[in-house]
Image 1 (cartoon, rainbow, N blue to C red):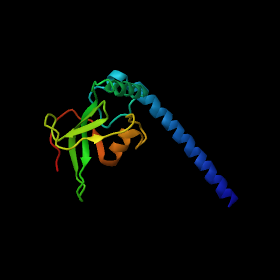
Image 2: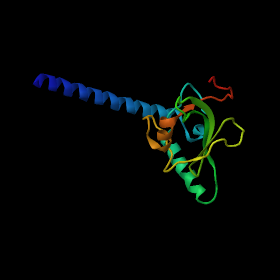
Image 3: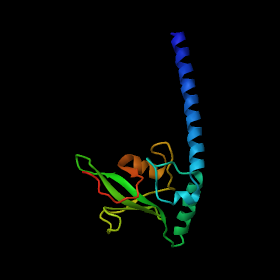
Image 4: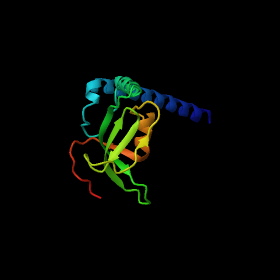
Length: 156
């Protein structure tokens, strides 16, 4: 039993070391891929990329400016929304996140809001760990961001 405990502890230590190294690599990659200006561009690539720490600071500045009465768009793009019915189908929606923390989503890019807005609380962030930050919790529970620029309909 002592030997198995020792082996187990060694494996846990090794696993923790690998996890820490992986987190460092992700941080380095996200810093090298994104600048503040690139964060406001449309999404690209095969999957959503983690945002840099500078982006969090920029969001905080925009959120503060909304206290002065200025409403700005923080982020916009496509996402998949999970339906509330029993089947739980995924539907593609265009979303807009403004500086007041309001998330609006539309059936089509230029249509009027088809669904009520959701209120988000706290600073918005998106990080590699699933479910971290207000936006991460929102996206991980019912939404999946889609990095596309086209307006093709989704097969249902």
